[in-house]
Amino acid sequence: MKKTLIILCLVAFFATMAFGKEPLSAYRFKHYMHEIFKNYRNTNISIDMHDYDLAEVHTRHFLENISKIPDFAKELPADGVKLDDAFLFATLDRLRTDVSELRKAVKAKDAGKIKKLQPEVLRSCIGCHTEANLKWLFRLPMSKNLFEEYMHEILDNVTMAEQLVASNDMDEAEDYVKIANQYLTLLKKVTPYEGPSGVLLERKRYLNELRAAEGFVLLILEDFKEKKPVDLTALKKPLNNVCVACHEPVMIK
Image (cartoon, rainbow, N blue to C red; front, top):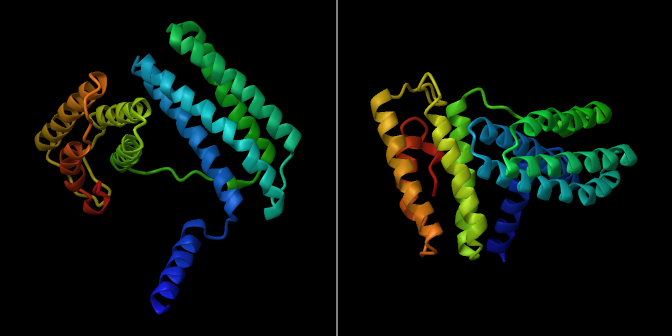
């Protein structure tokens, strides 16, 4: 009985730490709004890298996250948070239309149409933020260190891929490994080579570790392609070699 009580107290403590002063439905609403921003950013990154296949994946995730927002928005009044529902849902409809058109343009690799649609998507996001004017709800923590930000993105996407492999959703898992690989590529462009703790990385060693990790990713993507069993455990060690070089607590476990 005492053990059960301790466990329940710990669960309550960590739940409080996770959500802070924000009500649960408001937290979930904010989470998916931030996921939308991340989808927009990742779409633009992939377009800039001319990786239109991955940009198509990001726009699909974009649309999936948009579809989740209305239900969470309807819960907000119970938390004492009031939004203009008519404005919000109209904005979401416009955003959904713009992202759907952007996805079509990405599939067609129509550079002119893509360039025209990108600011249209962003305009919907900005319009919603301006109208809502709830800074606590839309505050997005931005990393001051790109190395840290990109490594966390790799960690998140590998973890998601691992969960999807466990549930046998191999197509979706492959997409998340591709996203992790995109951030490995972006790490090469990060200068100076400095981790979040201020530890300077040796350039040659750093690049060698990145290349080793990319090699493992290519082998795993080949397994996905050939419908072979996928074991993401083999990817964790080379990624940790990159990560631990400056920030041990962020190891992928």
